[in-house]
Length: 280
Image (tube, rainbow, N blue to C red; front, side, top):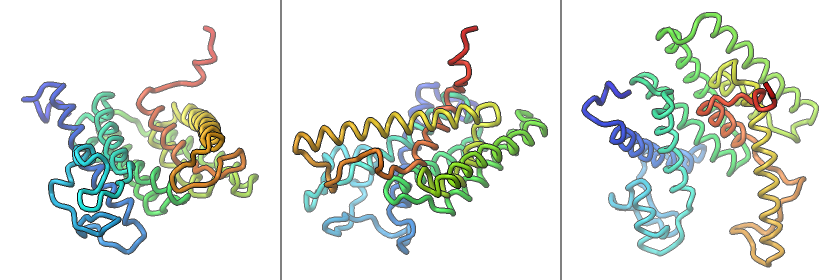
């Protein structure tokens, strides 16, 4: 990636990538909001409370939200913090892709950018609706396969690597499918099973086991933390926005965010959970 912007220092390159990622994140917010609603993605952005069309200076990623202090300029209604978070996370993912040398040229920039974007959409959509759009999973599968083929073309993978990646990804998916089957869909959804396949391909056969373990660890830790925090809120007679229920061990929690977070953490750090238990 650096050779494409040889006139920039590494510091300025990362700033440029961060800004570009935030712009993509702004577009992802539109996709997330309008997906499966029949709305056109090219429609004008407007306040969800008063319906007033937003001006161009309201649409600067990250900065507009901070400048407006999270409120509509026209009706002062609160703007969901989700918009800011999606822009920030997308910008961070793009930046980490460059920092960890996953993104090295224009091809990998486009493919990893597409993959990161789809993962953000899947995460937020599943968190809000408890469903993973099949078209997003299919897009993730196609973009990940193309990425592997590009790496093969660049000499970073061999045919044996590709075969092993697919085999291990299928085995990992079968494991999640087994959990879905024996739990009758109570532990995780069928969409999670489908999502496991492209995520397994993304991390590669060497890290699939770590990806699965880390995902379950994150799911357990974050779910227990959410249960604990919401119990404190209720005991303190303070309720969560738009909610009157307390999370319990029987509460439904979307699993896709943990799968995505586990895969990204594994991808960026190359963590090997087996080494954590090694005393050698």
